[in-house]
Image 1 (cartoon, rainbow, N blue to C red):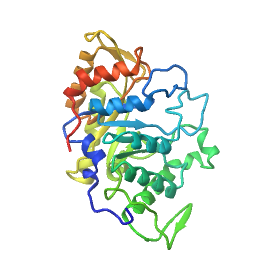
Image 2 (image 1 turned 90 degrees about the horizontal axis):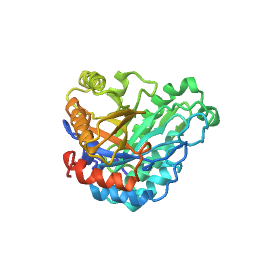
Image 3 (image 1 turned 180 degrees about the horizontal axis):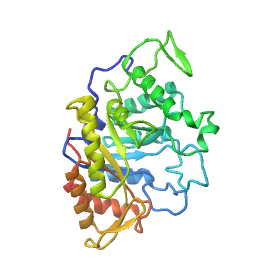
Image 4 (image 1 turned 135 degrees about the horizontal axis):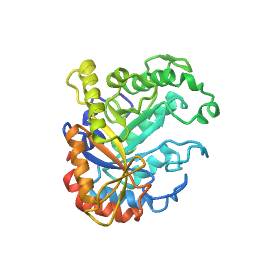
Amino acid sequence: MLTPSKIPYRSQPGFARTYAMNKLTLGLFYPIEAYSGDAPTMLGHIEIAQQAETAGFAALWIRDVPLRDPNFGDLGQIFDPWVYLGYLAARTSHIALGTAAIVVPIRNPLHLAKSATSIDQLSSGRLLLGVASGDRPVEFPAFGVESDRRGEIFREYIEVFRQLQKTSYEPLKWSGGILSGADMVPKPVAEEIPLLITGGSQQSQEWIAEHGHGWISYPRAPHQQQIVIENWHNEVRKHCGGVFKPFSQSLYIDLLKDPDAQIQPIHLGYRLGRNQLIKLLEVLEKIGVNHVMLSLKYSHRPAQQVVEELGRYVLPQFPTIEI
């Protein structure tokens, strides 16, 4: 862990169990509970994480919400993402641990690298690093960052972050610092932690395709999502040839007790029975979605019940990749 790895990022356990071409896997988006307002209870989440791992989910996804903004209305999992990921790493054994997403411009790139590579090593290579430029206006002045420069800072810090993983004692200079005569350790399990750009992150699609190892986007109607995915793969082919770079999306669900309940739109997702959910996921797989992060925020049933039903009836149709 003190020298750069030569293992390709595609062979990193977290990436390998979650992503494969022409295949869809499922993950759970924290907080794994239903709640109104901006604050979840966070009660029993470790037990649900272990339940999800036993059921066969591919990944658990954590958000980065450093401040409570009453105008934004969502605190995520409340706890610091790196601390909570360390806790999850110790209480699980093989499920991938993802971030969706770490806000890069408000962090020193050395701290970002130190935290991410530490989690990657402590989890035996299970970290999937979703990153973003941030979208909550209150955060940027609080952390001394110019909001209108966040896209530029994002690009710069991502480049520093990638170099820190792949080199040893190589001098680096960026707008916020100089690294000389020292090295950032640990290095990750693979040559790089899989880097998944979230949303637009103030970048062009060309830049995301060239610099990310995958893309996390938002839920859309399948016919709209298909166009987005086709454009994504075209950009990847144009800039990276035949390299597989997966497409992920979130999806909010309210899974009803009636397995045949028809689909009804809700915010960022659907209220539906499991049979309609399976049909929807089959469509998403067909149009090229590689991973779906399910959120239970708007559920009317206890999370344990929903996770149990998903594990028994839905996951067998979209199994996690065996490694």
